[in-house]
Length: 350
Image 1 (cartoon, rainbow, N blue to C red):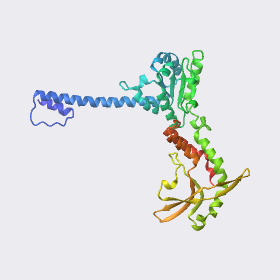
Image 2 (image 1 turned 135 degrees about the vertical axis):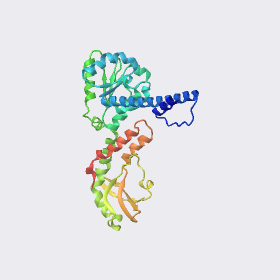
Image 3 (image 1 turned 180 degrees about the vertical axis):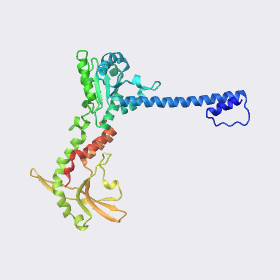
Image 4 (image 1 turned 45 degrees about the vertical axis):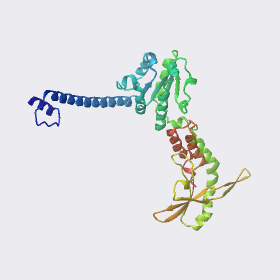
């Protein structure tokens, strides 16, 4: 019996027994202790395997995604080329821990990868595979401002078979055939290793924010800004409340991309009127009416005035997102919002 007590104490148990226990109770305690120890061991082993798997992906240069039916072709023709060029790659079927579902771990795998090579074939076309992975890779591209996805087409597939997803046309799409296979794969490898070009450089005038910003600048800001400062100084609020009104024009860009009246978003803001700027363009008189707002400083019990607006053109980003037209997801919307102001530039201040 003393041996049993020593065994329990050695294993770290905190069980205190004042009376000797019978054989059945002893077996149950030993079984319980063994079960708890086994669970703890498996948890530690699973954590270590997950850490190793993630580290392998982070240390590699590219994550390969393809249909299992193309395994023979890829391992015979593509993998040897990657090895010959010393391109460190990861295959989900090998590196993902056993017993874990590949699809459920794919978001984490793509998130931790540097580049993603998605190989499309007749098998992926028939089974509608890899579209989920393409979306995840594009989402990563948006968050990092680097195009991290490369598409390789096998067999009879061509560009018309690539899913019609916004932004995907800016990625490299290479058709791999038996005749020019080494040359094509070489170009794919060069594209994967090239990390010098940002996503915004790939489509400098092809994104939504660029068009909207230039439209707002040419059609509005470039017209009113030369006249704005003098109009503010001459307006009634500037004259009546000396030192309480700024001569600057405040352009507000909400993260939501929406264009809503400022007074509806904060009770301390009130719309008090409009400036009136008259200009002649191509012999035609045009009138522009920038908004004037009063801001209540509750701590100092002071009122301040300014000329401010959320650009109507900017509000198109939020409209496209909220109308659910399938053109923008939340990360794409955030990217367009962030692009809008740099497109206009700092020289727009009066």
